[in-house]
Length: 497
Image 1 (cartoon, rainbow, N blue to C red):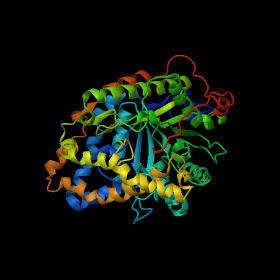
Image 2: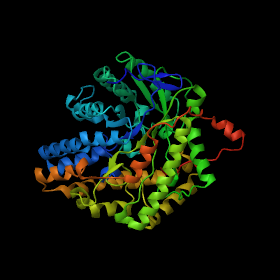
Image 3: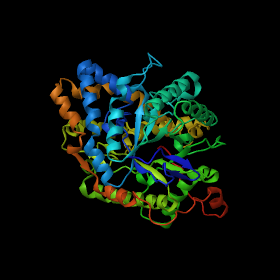
Image 4: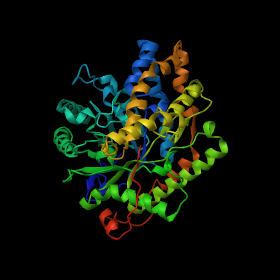
């Protein structure tokens, strides 16, 4: 049994007995909020599902996705997860499971089937869960992971989008308000409000409405601009934890290689301190809700080269985790399971799923259809670079267009390669499954079952080493401005991630 509801007490999270609790875990991204790089399709989830429906027909479509959601996380997954010492699973979900755009404010009870199932499984294994609405009506950011078919975050310009999200959170809170193994609610993932002030205003309004239904659970609130900025925030909401996301460019193919130099280690620590300064200055707990490198694929890179690349990324991750240990940070690494890009577990290269997608994944890589973990491409550069140069020439402000981490090329990649081109290829991907029987679809979905997946041993080992806090009191996170004044501040502002 959980020792009562978790709650915020000053800079700590405590259980019902007042005992401090450190939450450390991962997210099952790509499950109830599908993402292109996690399972292999192009574009956005709703486009992928529409294409699969067209190719498979209603009956087979429903059968496949129900089995896939079932196999993706089972009791065996929870047992493995708990064996690592991790104690919290973040559950990203798409609002479309629970509400229909063409039938708004009508709850889809069937959408809770697998969410309830996984929460119950986690409870059995003493794993807390954080419910994360990764996608909201209109899209809270301009990227694929909010199931946004454009590079425009309409959520911020339409009050009805916001009202619907608040209504849905009230329904969710009413359902789980008595569950003490639910650690709380993460209302928005990586919001991007260009005006900065609308996000904290939305949080204030949401907090009041949710508390009418559930006054016990913690709210886990992401900062603005992909959870990296706190402009416009001026107050702390009750029983709330504020969250940053701390990806490091050295963990990606287009970033530099981590070699463990003093300068690199200082940058890793400084970039985190900068993002966490808001929490430090207001005396609240800090949750690093996402971080982690991507990993080289031996099939694409060769065994020897992949092992070399991945060891460098494990080393970088280990250094980040040392920083989080130093400051007593709650964290949730991204992510638990995928097809071999970033997960603790991944589908086998010999699985029916990976074999069916093999040539398609080569095409995705060559065309840079995925933003996450993309590889350099001379072919794409030859097409896009002249356009980027032209835009920068005629529009000097293009390169600084919000969101700040994106340069002109990142905006063009998103608008052309990852929305228009990707959507145009949705049917081509879905036709990989044309003519499949239910038995075929079951076998393909079963590729994601624990029994068929491969454990990423290097990642598992590092996470297990850092799942629990080392003995002794953690240090207080310094203010970034103090590092600047002392001449000790150095960090890389990410571009294109």
